[in-house]
Image (cartoon, rainbow, N blue to C red; front, side, top):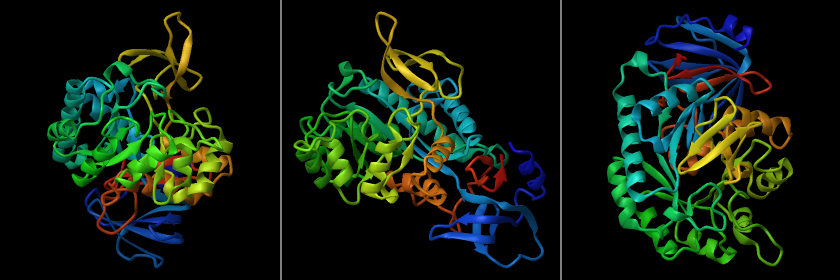
Length: 407
């Protein structure tokens, strides 16, 4: 944490009192406001004003940005723990660690395992989310669990990545409904490959029960992808990675992602999963408003370099990237990242692909919209939980607030 942040952000406000944050730039839902005050009342946003509030504490961040807390909608784990471990206590530890990095909401993400294993993981996430809601105010120092993203098992082998083809199956609405029961309704998004039998009907059925569909880990043709989009799918899983590429005579799933309106294309912006020039191509094709930043972070995020497990597979984290370990001990394909959203935002601004405001929105409100959770997170709006970040001009997160409390 920067010394200036320590100096300017003395914890003078009472946890339950109304107070104001004085900001140089505030990323509101409609625009960036300069030189104003964000009002906080009992842990929720109470409005914004350019006039200095009277008779309340003011926390001075007048040289900083105030931005919505980041929302990670595709993340498997952190600090040594994985969603598929199915332990509510470990998910709480991940939630606390993510909040320290500026991520104030997250969607725990499963991967391709057996149907019973995924069900158990969903139940553990539901338990962790319930524990969060029931926690005392002083214990609410965690990134909020906002849903569950099922990354698999409805994929195909050619672009399997680090997903185990032995557990891949055709989409089944009956299976999804069973998982949703275990999840207490938390599942908000389900991934699938459009070329699998029953994919179009699955998109119709899942959407009808409030679960959005995401396309990826797939060798689908452009036409197969479009059929699923026309049936209700709304997003693409980490564009470029794990999908049929763009060719001028066969646009593939990448072409489908880049050419369609009102769809969301996730990007992993660590500079290694996708070249910055290819990132710029997607952003310019779709507009930043349809490109959510995700981390696809694994359990090795926030951990030392070394060997870890991802589902059934051994992986090695080295030079800020995780690879599968092959039988001969060499490193195979990329398995996932150790990225944080604060670093993804910094990268996009450093690479001059988008503005600071746009990068912030891509990691907050755009991510929330892509998973249908923008009614509870991703924006600074009156009545919402006061989850927000204080940023330097270089997009370094120097303070994070959860429900109005600096954590």
